Length: 114
Image 1 (cartoon, rainbow, N blue to C red):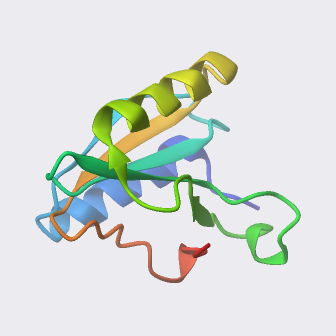
Image 2: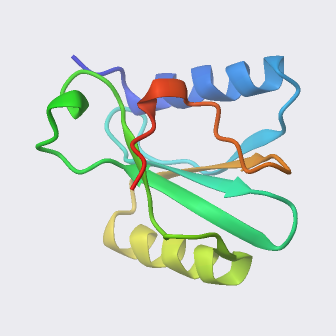
Image 3: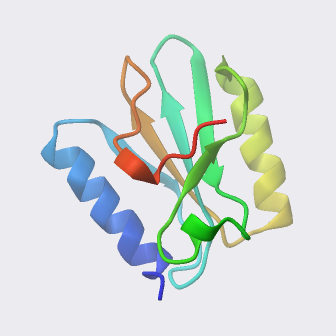
């Protein structure tokens, strides 16, 4: 059984804050089942977005897994436009912005590289 979105977001924000990594919820979605997108801001004008991994991947069944939206970081305006389109499609989604000069997400094994 998967943890509710609101609880997962809260725990992720606390974990990042404990490591002195700035992170905040820039869009609050449905607390029970909203999709969570993570905006990785390297503070150089370029960002990467992590989206929930596609369903059907065996590893996704029990834990949240992530995949990158872009092959390489994009200008922030382009990333924000992508998130706005996603929000039109799914008004229940969450967006968390993580600011780290190295573009780290701190998700450990929950990351599915391209």
